[in-house]
Length: 122
Image (cartoon, rainbow, N blue to C red; front, side):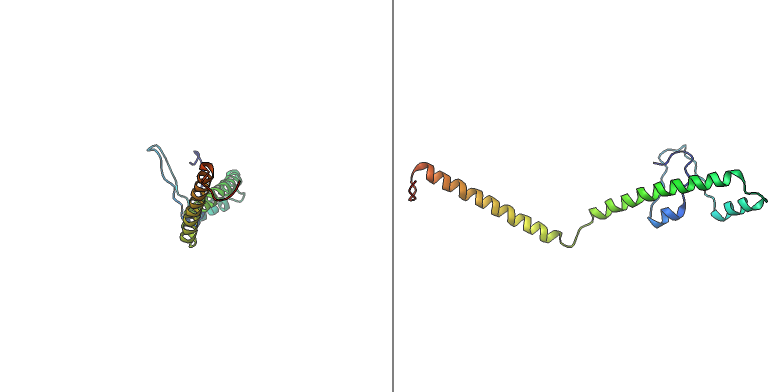
């Protein structure tokens, strides 16, 4: 979730195909073009005091948001099916059958030995 007063660059959202969704009705969002901000900062002879603070906030939020979006993309990529998944599933099924068969054979051998009907001398 985004904190109140958060500055979000559309470019980052577009790069990761992300969206911002309002979670309640009392949400306000403003879309300001970067060219308008640059023009406002250059309009006067001296750069306004708010401009550097704005750029600092924008940079910090962009780094944090980019990190979160990268993490979300990685999680989504890990959920995708891999081309080797069917082979691995088949191997696992064969392995489980083999382990179960080996366990049954051990139990049968132990039962035969326990009853004393074995041809193998003890």
